[in-house]
Image 1 (cartoon, rainbow, N blue to C red):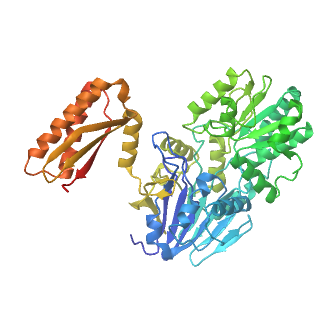
Image 2 (tube, rainbow, N blue to C red):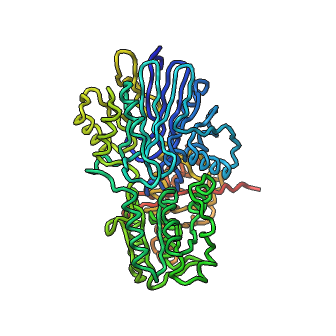
Length: 556
């Protein structure tokens, strides 16, 4: 794909989905990448740990890459970095302070030796032959979040990153003045966060959440308080620590990601009171009124701390009848069922539970419709392309842009891989680059395709059946009867009649095939599968994955 003196903009992830954000801006011999996130798998992706962007285009254009720029430190923006660095040579990573610390920790855990991480601030400017990049501060649920303005030979591109407009934030306010200045200077294309484009009005201020949490602490002074929240929401953690200090409570941390976040927040100077944090053993020795448990598991993850506490399987913490549990979070799409199960278990134990549907114990870090409109008005772009969201979110955000005066023919609802071509004449959609999903399963990256996922789904639904047979290939004889072994299909000892029928059917198929002149190993396997599949479906209503195992016996 060649476009002389045109600027190309496209996403390798983050469009039509929530997660794995990765965006590319290219001009002639230079290319910059914005964010490199992961997406956590839906329940149908059995055995998959992460979904990451396809780095094929970047590998093919490796020499053009000038650097990777990170907007903030959430997993859907930095989680893909270890996989990217193992695949593509990235000369430099620019990241704000909190994100840089999280990235270093992530690389250290994976034994990846990469030192060229440069911490940027809002006043930082990055220059190359074709690009000049500046930043503007945004408000989000993690410190040091920024939007990016990329000045190209064909005009300015603004990428907002994740943002909201909070007039009473816990941390610094969004820099509305700088946004307005960038807007006045003339912006060709705005790409803006669409996560909450379906939510009307304004998002709740973080200060309202703080007031609610403070009220709960004041109302339940004699109870032990357990709070589950996102470990990355440093401002929320900071306030919880300050509230505990005010109410003379110590804090015990549960969950690896919570430990890591607090450690990095201390390192970056966001949390300064270190004496308030105690060990779980120390917490068990204190009165309920003297302690607060801060834990992971706000999304109902089965192995997270709160889920194990609710199950009664946590080794260190057991629920008390007068405990107060606060879910200072809202379910990520797809997690509602697991969160509901955890809440039900807590209610069954008789504890008091606060959720976002009952009290204002959580607010989103993403702007609702009125905030998205404000961003559109401040930046005042000529063209608009929403990003960070599913199709319905992108569509709603585009409608908001039209209401804010951007002509419909100057808006784009894109898919991953769709290329926007920007030049002096304007912007148009033209061409596509490879941008598929890549699955990560343990240490395996990219070699797990849809067929493997389909097989895993079949096994989870219908089980697996192995047919083990001994065959003398020289005499074309079957030695003994086939041995049937199953997992997740039927219990052999309890279904002796069915197993005998399967053995008989398999024996007939094998003997018939051995008589044929064109006998070979693969044909026999295929014949067994094609014969037994409809037979098993007819008998049981289920069809397991059939695995023929042939043991070749030779004459002495």
